[in-house]
Amino acid sequence: MPDISPNGAPVARLLAGPAGLGSSSLSLRAALLPHRRAYEEGDGHEPPGSPVGPVPGSDLTPLPYREREWGDGTYPPLLCPETVRVDDALAAEVDRRLTAWAGRIGLHEGRMEEFTATGFGRLATLAHPDTDDPDRLLIAAQMNAAWWAADDYYADETDLGATPTELPPRLALVTSAMDPPPDAGHYTGQLEAAIAADPVLVALRSALSHVARHATDAQILRVRNITSQMYVSWAAYAAWRYLETPPPVWRYLAARQHDSFYTSMTLIDVVGGYRLPAELFAEPRFHTALMQAGTASVLVNDLHSAAKEAADELPDSNVILLMAAEDGCSAREATERAVHLHNDFVRGFEQSRQALSAVPSPELKRFLRGAQAWMAGCLEWHGSSSRYQS
Ligand SMILES: CC(C)=CCC/C(C)=C(/C)COP(=O)(O)OP(=O)(O)O
Image (tube, rainbow, N blue to C red):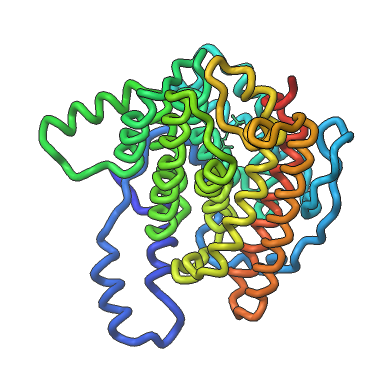
């Protein structure tokens, strides 16, 4: 039987609003409360998980920056906030739950050892230090694992069946898996059969079901829409791969900035157990700040994965490979340029963050600190995950 979120809290609290809103909010509440959410069986949820709402005493202090060594230590350092928390026991618990979930739904069948070693639970634990609730951290671990599964099986890994021509229709199915369209009779039966037969689609749907247990409708819509927005960039990469015509760097960056860890960062408040109101999430300066943080983090990914990406029989777009080809420079020089670009994005984020400091919203401050923590945890994880060790 479908159920409203375990404690009934997200919708109820959202609709309650500040005291004294008056009768119009009461009638809105009465009209919307009968809506009940359906959740997927086996989506990994294990209560308790604290409800949406302010967490008393949460730290709003911005994180300090540091020049951090990375890779083999011979490149210029990356400007990045300090990592807030390294908790191996918590990471192991989130990874245990993640592996159990992936095994149940058949994600990465035959490759489970490699998947477990990647440590998406560890990434979630490093990147979301404002909760130590494993159920909430699992949300980030599952969504990132599912996004990355689409990346591997649809976009990048030829050995795993990724092909540029099949990518766009597969991504269209992702949208329908995460946002089931209204009933279209027996055509819906065919759609559901196709989703059930593809572990990547099952993973994305199941992970979003777990998000929904902890999120408001606006937060869920945010995750769905930004996932689809990211996939527009993937379609561009697929065309470039198919035609074997690498894009100029500016064009790659324009796409990569919409295909970045901005997507992962949309979960910061959901995982943290609070809600950044939709109008603040959409605030242009905040949007810029989050894009800057997301881009800086995804450049960290390009820095760590250039060798892996060059090795595929159809090489992926990667900023270092593209800069080296376009500027006719060595991989080392291109790497140094990418580091400078990364550091400029971090400085840009910091300027944007400071420009927002007058906005009197604890949730906004907390989310911006969360973006700093995400950048920090992302760098820590890329330096240690088996995915990027050659
Ligand atoms: C987690 C997430 C939102 C994944 C989708 C896109 C993204 C930000 C990536 C990091 C994938 O980019 P890429 O294919 O370069 O990543 P890998 O080097 O394969 O890890």
